[in-house]
Image (cartoon, rainbow, N blue to C red; front, side):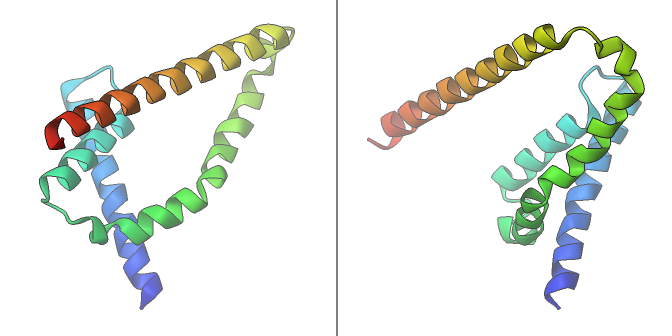
Length: 122
């Protein structure tokens, strides 16, 4: 019974992601459909349309096995080996710079939200 519940929860996540892709294609948006799906899921969960317990176990399962989802993308990069050949130092620099940007912006946003939450509840 637990596996059926988890499969249904993952199916809900997949459907929301696919709705995001459909929205992206229908309106010809530059934002990826998966990102639109994430925003849609955020709205659905924060408004209470869908309670968290309807997707919680499935999302935990997906997060636990997240590394497996990056393997096809990594293997796909090998099709473009000549594009990346000889640019190792540049790729390392770009990877480090983008990582610091993501960490910095995530830290800034989380501190700002914490501060705003304390002002509202304090």
